[in-house]
Amino acid sequence: MALLFCNAFWGTDFMDQSGYEAILQRLHDGRHMCKDVEDLLKMRALAEEKYGRDLVAIARKAEGQTEIGTLKASFDKLKAEIEKTGNLHIQLSERIKEEVQKIELFREHQREQRKKSKKLYEQRCKEADEAEQGVGKKTNVTTSTHRQSEKVMNRARLCRQAANLAEKQYRWNVDQLEKTCQDWESTYRSACEVFQQQESERINILRCALWDHCNLLSMQCVWDDDSYEEVRNILEQCDIITDNNSFIKMKKTGCRPPAPIEFQCYSVVDTNGGVRSVETNRLSVVLPRISFSGCPEAGSNSDGTCTPAQQRGGVTEEKYLVLYDFKAQEDDELSVSKGQVITITERGEDGWWRAFRDGISGLVPGTYLTKISPHSTRLAAAHPECNPIK
Image (cartoon, rainbow, N blue to C red; front, top):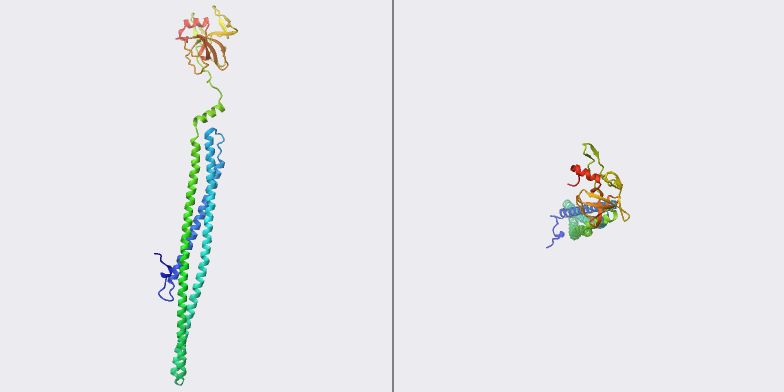
């Protein structure tokens, strides 16, 4: 059951104003509470506005233009959603400011109502005081009349008449005071009802304002989560293989590694105990046409002199010895084993040479080969430690 102000704030006598003062103090505290809520919402609005503007600035400053493929799309989506979130927080700030304006208008309205109620109450109190003072004056007149009647016996009849008139006046003043009291009580009761109504409205408006504020924040959280969900959806489409393939297609430079650089023996001991210098095909990438015997693009006679390379069908063919095992990695490559003799018909500048073996043609790395000549064969037989075939 709801209690009423008009039944709970009366004084012990006609002049007691403690109940009215208690109500005024409550209204004063309520006014401060409205101001506190208003200040809270103002500060929150400023914080939301600053946060939103910072998010927009962050999204616009972030670059990420060097990325490609699906990861770039995900990053661009993230920037867009951050900017969208920032704009939503700025909009939230504006809505909070609107709630602040509503509370300001409500406080102004209540202030005007309190002024009217207080003015009416003070006027009634003043009228009651004047009526009470009038009764006191008439009582003094009556007392004075009685004293005069005692001193002037000959005017007893006149004094009695004056006393009767004073008594009637006194009764009339008392009646007027009672009517004034009744009017004051009625006014006070009305004022209490107005104050209670104001207090109910204040509690309701603040409750609704805080409720709406919480709803706005909850909606903002939902919008934020939706924005992040959009980014997650784009990230689900981010594929590592797709991005790497895109990069390879855009920036690829070659499909094969360069031929390896190998170390070969440069000197051997001849049959007379002397040291002879022997050149090998050591840097075929730089000098692709230098043979093991030191005669470029040439064969060798039985006496060790250089002879032109063999010609077959207009194509120069030379015999080479395989120094290392090589396993083909591509369809156009030829697998060879250490110690095999193959025929070279073409030596590419990239270090890959075209070879024939058992009727099969393919590419092999030139640094895996050394040219065969009678001179190198004799050296290999005399000094097996420098022979690549073991």
